[in-house]
Amino acid sequence: MKVPLLDLKPQYNSLKKELDDAILKVAESQYFILGPGVEKMERNFCDYLKCGYSIGVSSGTDALLVALMAIDIKPGDEVIVPDYSFFATAGVVSRLNAIPVFADVDPVTFNLDPSDFERKITQRTIAVIPVHLYGQSCDMEAIMETASKHNIKVIEDAAQAIGVQYKDGSYVGTIGDIGCFSFFPSKNLGCFGDGGLVTTNNKEFAEKLKLLRVHGGVAKYYHKIIGGNFRLDAIQAAVINVKLPYLDSWSESRRRNAQLYSDFFIAAGLAEQEGKTSFDSKNKVLLPKAVYKSGLRAGTSMTAGIRNYHIYNQYVVRVQKRDGLKEFLTKNNVGNEIYYPVPFHLQECFSYLGHKKGNFPIAEGLADTTLALPVFPELAKEQIEYVVQKINEFITK
Ligand SMILES: Cc1ncc(COP(=O)(O)O)c(C=O)c1O
Image 1 (cartoon, rainbow, N blue to C red):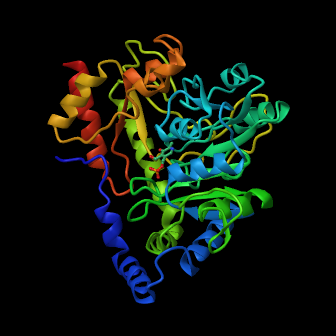
Image 2 (image 1 turned 135 degrees about the vertical axis):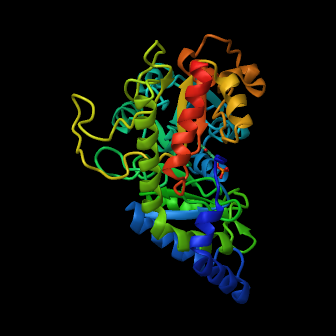
């Protein structure tokens, strides 16, 4: 059996007519950049995410960059980021000559650890970028409380988390000052190239973000501030406008697949329950846990019963002999990937910051043991069963 990590063709085939028509309309209009299709997309997201403003941009990376520009990050300012994320989260900070300050992550959710965030705050801290990794919300209550106590701006990196709801039902990306999304094709809502979105409830930020998107120009060739080319193409907006109504059902299918994995892993005796953080004879595979699924954490005011508590943009397990398993699965036609093999503090490009191995134990532990398995919506139950069988074969051989 063959199980790819991601296969986008079934989704395209199921919407082929709608998508082809939408793209053709753009071709016929010859209106390629921004314009009515992008504006329609922006209105759609304000409705879907229940936020005041949304602005289509050229990618998720540019969403983060333009968000930092909008809050006026200056050289030497410090921005706290989780040590474990996709490179863009930290890269954009350095690109503005600000300093990325790393904080360790939570061992269950792999998201920013709110207490380490608080520990890393200094007089120079201007912002924090919580990342809703793999499609699950950070502990936004704790993060927002600390940020507001220290007057720090919150830029949410929701690139992997479009449509994810926090425990009170609000959508991630609309909780902090600015939210950043990516429409990279492998995301739950992907376009046919690069694309992204910024969201905010703050009118001033919205106006500034719109200016920054077009080189800071108020009118053609009159530049109020220095921005860049962060514009979104009309074809990408047309694709997103077709796909958005299906997003929740695709995320639902991913949740079903994640549940199947958990059930199969537990039935195979490879795990006792979800969310374990250390290996032992009964937990050879550590399973992801959706912490806001139900009941939720003690001592907080939370509403259970939200639907999109996790959208599983990635389904990531932890195993001890990860690199060997990766090779074995690849040989057996099971797609897999390591998100991410090197935490930020050990990246060569950040060596100037002077960190060393051992500084961020949770992130380092994840980098050595995480493996993403196929979880895309159209996956069949038998394929998931096969993946678990193969993992069992490797671990018990
Ligand atoms: C957490 C995170 N942040 C930022 C980005 C950047 O998005 P893009 O690839 O659209 O530039 C990604 C995309 O991979 C991501 O996963």
